[in-house]
Image (cartoon, rainbow, N blue to C red; front, side):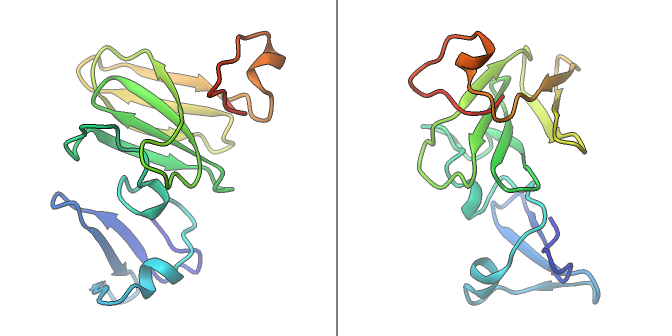
Length: 159
């Protein structure tokens, strides 16, 4: 993901670390202090690890269950793809343990990747074993009850 000033990139690795990079000079930035984490504003967020998404992990997760995530440009929503064939929608930032969310099923196996489209009117999810590509329509700002749907106690203002 790019920082807002385009001076840093961040990524996750297989050892479950947040890594930071200087793209202009081509080297890794060692974060020996919290200044990178605390002081950097991120233009994009697709890393499954980090403060703004620390609540996306389900109880008894082994650390590999969330395969992908994507935050909207305005920073208000995060969507995730997991090993259980589930697409989850959260209000962002997702900083509480086991954060409230809306869960959507459709894939018959793990979901490999997920992204909001350029206009953030749709979410695209890509399955693993089912090889399915799903297009989910967003209904931002309209509570479910206003769309003629039943509202639960954990109802979100989106999707």
